Length: 286
Image (cartoon, one colour):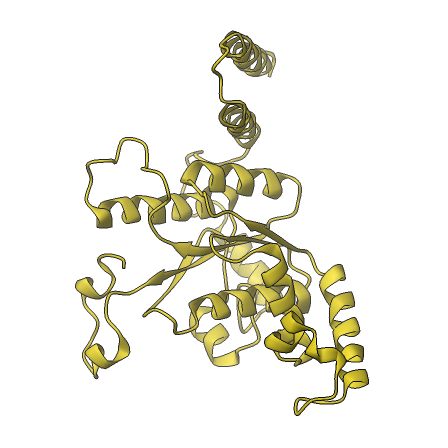
């Protein structure tokens, strides 16, 4: 234990010395430096976990089976309330990456938001939602619309405060007040990240997970980042997208949480026309 602790202290000391040297550079990019420091420190914290230890098959199987036999569940993971989907997938489980793939403008973000809402507002599960296109304000108002039943357009333009074909003003206001209370109590954490990188996503997810604020990660959605992925500038588009998907899958395993995302397919619904989707269906992006 003393040797291990000395090793960890040496690593922290080395990080501090390295940071001190980098701070002497007048052209240092502070956000990049802070992200690098945070990632390094979080990596040291996660190193204390059991990740990577060799396990002898059979050592804990009997205990695990007995535990499940004493408390059987029809769905192992987190439920979203769609019974057929929950039973087919066995819920969202730790270490798994689930990707919804569909053509443009077919409701991918709506599915991600509804599942995140069901998990957090409905079940009290800590959800971190990273959006590359939806602002905090838009997400909040769309959540309020889903919970209250008041149309999103009326929430965004203020017509909820008037009697319309969608209901009386007093009733709509009452439902929105109740929805707001539910949203405030829910462990739903959202960040608008149009300038995302795999490094930023990983660092934020690790930070929130250590704070107990990320039991499920939702990333909306898989696409090429605004800037080139380090070392992959010359790679094909599908290879770079594959790298990002792999990073999300690895993150699910490292943090032992479910990760949910979406991806835009190449073909629209009319092209499929009963045909079974192949590699070309999800092999690139628009």
